[in-house]
Length: 180
Image 1 (cartoon, one colour):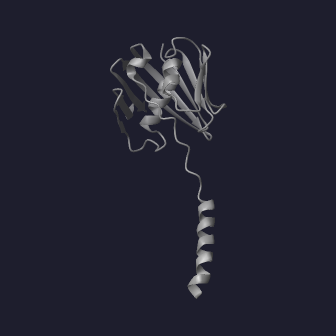
Image 2 (image 1 turned 90 degrees about the horizontal axis):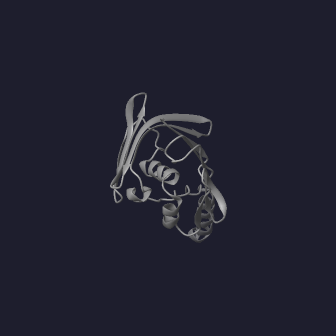
Image 3 (image 1 turned 180 degrees about the vertical axis):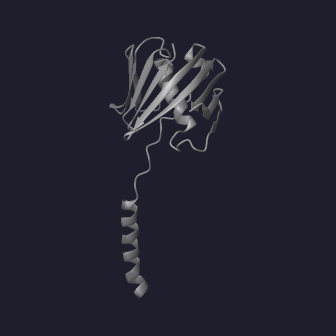
C-alpha cells in the first residue's frame, strides 16, 4: 500500500502549491460607452505621461470623437505606436511590437472614457459595487466604498487643459495635457 501513503502527501503538496500561486490580477472595470454618450464631437492633440513604479513613459496622441466613433493614434518619437477605433460595438486596434504589453487598447479606451465622458453616462454603465462622484473639476471612482481612482481637471471642458488620473488600484498616474 505505498500508494495509499503517497496520496495524502500529494494532496498536501497540491494544496501548498495552490496557496503559493499568486492571485490573478484584478480585472479592469471594462466599461465601453457609446461614442455618442460624450455628447460632443472633439478633435484634440494630447501629450500623455504615464508614471508607474518609478518609470515614466510618454506618448503624443491625436484623439477624435464624434457620435459614431472614437479614434486615437499614439506616437512616440514621431512614429505611430498605437491606434484604436471604437464604433460603440467593436474596438479595433493596432500596436507597435515595441510598445509595452501593459499598454492595452481596452485600458486606453477605458481611461479616456473615465476622464472625458459625462459622469452620468459612466454611472449608468458601472457594475454593482462601483460608483462615481463628480465635483466639477474632480472625480472619484469607488469600489465597495473604497477609492479606486481620482481624476482632476484644470479647466472645462474636460478635454482642454490638463487631466490627472491617479489609479490607486493599479498604482499608476496618467497625466494628459491637451494642446491649446
